[in-house]
Length: 241
Image (cartoon, rainbow, N blue to C red; front, side, top):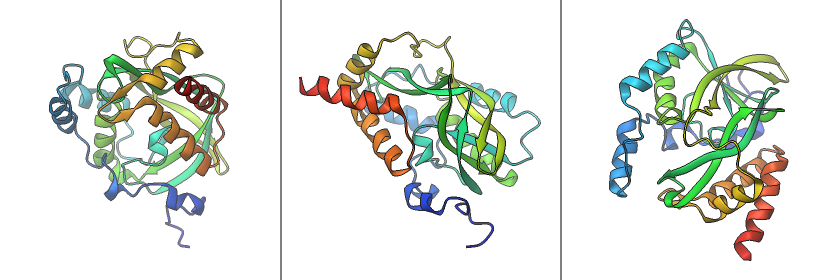
């Protein structure tokens, strides 16, 4: 194994993480999202403009564009980062928490008729995930794709948080839930979460499929999340009832 192997710390992750060239999100741009939305007859006025996204990226990465960048992944970024990375580590963010509070009516995994629900990163009691290191030379191009994916609309705020790994604590970029955004619903009850996940559906698939996908990948990656496990059990019961 060479020292520049991105999987040198965790070789077992290699078959679990989708190569960049196979990712839908490689070179992602808002134009792709707008095209998909129009194809399925969905509104696209919630999508930020390229100028807004780029301004947000420049603010967040001011003074950091010429150095290596760590990015914390808590959901689908773990197995489908869609970016070129030089290193991956398992990590624990002590001040963050994975919560099902991302309310979807925009057509992805929910509509106005069948609202859906997905996970977002919030402040909390700790969150297991992965961190990816993007080499300095790749930061300008790769973060552009990342911003067009994560900051497509109002939902997240880019912030730098400490992430603990077996090889030291790193400051990593994370996209935290923006509670001022209308699609972040932090006060949902567990019963409401279960119903939304069990019934929400859009052109990307159902919210239940999203949850089951999370649970499957977490099992493969040996990441334990009691809330995901509880939701899977209760959503299955709701759907079969």
